[in-house]
Image (cartoon, rainbow, N blue to C red; front, side, top):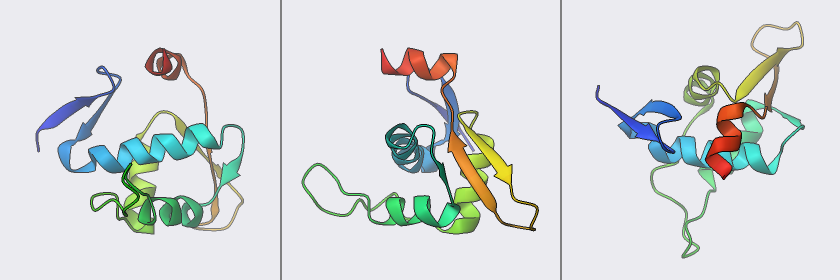
Length: 102
């Protein structure tokens, strides 16, 4: 799989996840400091709208794929609640995130 730089070389992702990652980061920025479940972010991505108001065709995902994407991205951290497969995710601000928003 070829990799493509996203957001000025900050994160390297497979080319088939560029739009999912972009929408995932948008959700994180909207919910800074709040914990969320996989189900919440999957719902956001599956109903993500383009600028013209239509549902985006390339952001559709499921919980398994979303867990992999969140786990591989340095801006999201996982907080386990002790039960297998359950827990919360949180978007954190890193130095790289500050560079992206400038």
